[in-house]
Image (tube, rainbow, N blue to C red; front, side):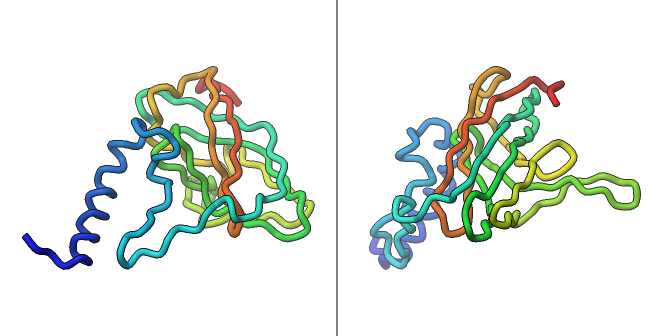
Length: 176
């Protein structure tokens, strides 16, 4: 079978994307779905995170509220911008979770609900708290090794900066 190169490249890319969730917990970090793709026809190489500057931040009180039965977990922490420029937290990834999203709990008309947040801006010298009832990381599809008392790495992603790794302590469901 002679397929044009661009069709073959698209087929390989689709197969890789479909297989990524299956391999997410089995592959070592260097070979994970977060590794850049190189030499794919029609695909620009991903930017090398080592070439990006590291955000000047302080992260304290980083913890995860563990929930049983595969339920989504919440990630909480305090973040302070130590730099001279505004920062935008635009996402996060973790080898311990297949999906990490920025969320905020909001109250409207007496009803509380969670909404997805595209970014959280932090002015120079200012901070923001990710806490129950406010901003938080929504952590979905945990690895089986995530249990109370363990530690997990979550890489915070700031616009224009290299991923910023943070160790979070996993606490029992009743923790505050």
